[in-house]
Amino acid sequence: MFKVKGVISCLILVASWLNVASAENIYQVEVNAGANVSNKELVDTAFERIMLKVTGRYDTLDNEILLKYLPPLPELVHQQTVMGDGRALFEFNSFKVNQLLRQAQISVWPTPRPNTLFWVVQDQEDQKTLLSEHAAAGLITGLKEGAQVRAMPITFPLLDFDDLNQISITDVWGRFLTPVVTASQRYNVDYIVLIKATLAGPKSQLTWQLIDAQGLPLLQGEEVGLVEDSSVQVSHQLADYFVGQSSRVLAASDDDYVVVQVENVNAMADVVMVKRFFQQLSNVSKVTLKTIAPGNMQLQLQLMGSQEELKQTIATHSNMTEIEQDIEGVDLSWRWQVIDHE
Image (cartoon, rainbow, N blue to C red; front, side):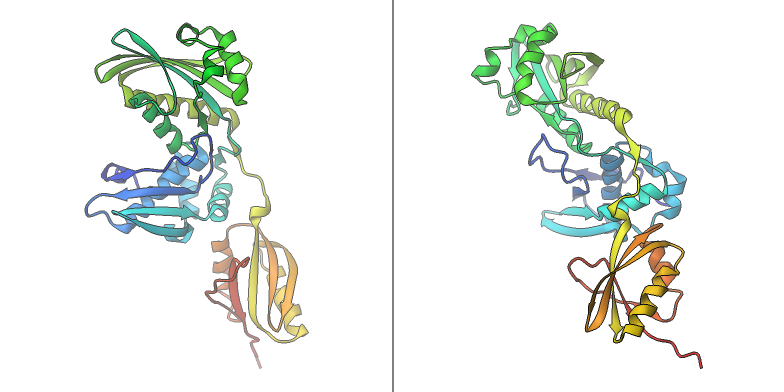
C-alpha cells in the first residue's frame, strides 16, 4: 500500500511564486531533499503534494479505490529535473493523474480557480500599516506559502495613489465594506479578504473576513500564534472553503484519448487487422485512424480506463510488442506481428 505519511517531515518542499495570482503549474512541485533521503521518498512526497494541489483535499491518499488503481509512482512522473543543491522539480503527467482520479471517483478542485484579493493591516507597537505584496513581513510570506501549496490564486493591492485615494487603514481595520469593495473593483477579483493582525513579538492575533466581490460576507475566523504560521492557516482555511464550494468529479473529456503508433504495418490488410485488434479490446470504446505511413500507422483511441490498464491488456497478446519511442504527439507505441497459427 502506498504510504507517504511522515516522509514530509524529513523534506522541505518549496514551489516558486512566479505569479501569485495564478493557479498554473498544478502538476509541478519542487522538492528539496534532506540528508539521506532516497529518490523514492522524494517521488512519494512530491505525489502527495500534487494530490493536495489537484484535489484540494488532505485525505485523498486514504482512498482505498485510489490505492487499488495506483501504479508505481515513477509511471506518473512526466519529468524529473535536478536543479542543484539537492533540489528536484517534478512534473506529473496530468493525463494519467486525472484518469486515476476519475477511476477512483475522487473530486478535484477545477481550474480556473477564483482569485482572491487581500487587504492586510498590521498593528505592531501601536503602529498600524497597510501591507503590500512586497512588504518584509512574515504575514505576507505565510499567506503566499499557504496559497502556493494549495495552488490558490491570490492578489495583493498595489497601494498606489489610486488605492490610497479610495481606502484607508480604518476602512480595513473596521471592516467598512463599501470602500473596500469600491477600491477592489480595479483588480477584477472574485473574492476579497480583510485581515487585521496584532503583533506582539513573534506572536500574533489575526482576525479575517472573506467577502465576495459585491461585499457579501461569507466566512470569518481568527488565528493566534506565530505570525507566519497563522497566516499560512488563513490561506488553508480559505482554500478549504473554495474546494467545498466547487470541487467535482472529472467527467470524461479529451484526456480519455490517446494516440498510439503501430510499427511493422506494411499492407492494407495489416491496417485493417490492427484497427480491428484495438476495436475488440474491452477497455477501448472508440478507434479512429489518424495516419498511414510507410511501415507504420497511427490511431486515436478513446479509453475506458487508464493507459496502464491498456498496456496490461495488450501485453497478453503475442502479436503486439510494446516499444519505447519518443515521438511528438504519440502517447504509446507497439510493434505489430502477424502470428501464423498453422
